[in-house]
Image 1: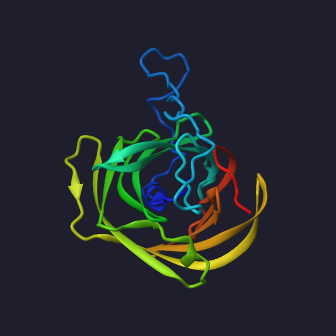
Image 2: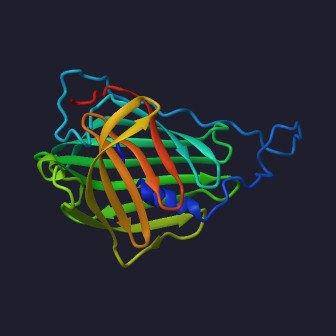
Length: 259
């Protein structure tokens, strides 16, 4: 779940410079044989069967193989998209790990935005360590773009729950990004990007799934500020970014809130 993430902020930042509502002159169904017919991408599916006896290492970031979480994503431009996140088990350099895959598709079925992200994690005790992230995006009629995030050693997507109960607890991690747009050569950034997190305490919020008590965490990357809300057993349930983009959990399976 998550989100995340995350690092999901960077996906949002990458799209913020584009106009998802730009008309795609090469994608339509008006019967013109010289123009391509848009075909919606296949919906994301998990590979593992959910095991109800599986216990995640961190309840605020529950990596549960076979689980599915779905969100409504409202961009500040007014565009609305569906987000699906699935988790599968993996092996990372001889360690038991997890692969989280996320798909963002706008409400038209992918005419304006299709984004697929894959993140690799391992547990370090009750902390969640992120190892790698790869993202592929298509926005309207612009060239496909790809990004890879290489994380520093001991980069934690979520720290131990015992520290999260204390407001003003902080942590951070860094990574370097390599991106490519269309057929252009890959561009690797020399300076690392640093994300910092601050626990703001618990707060009751209302979701499409009902009222929940959530842990509020503020995330900063440069001048960008995002507020994430996590529920024990569910993970990320809501996200508000300073520029107006929002996420809300709308349904889930293989996950269960912890009282």
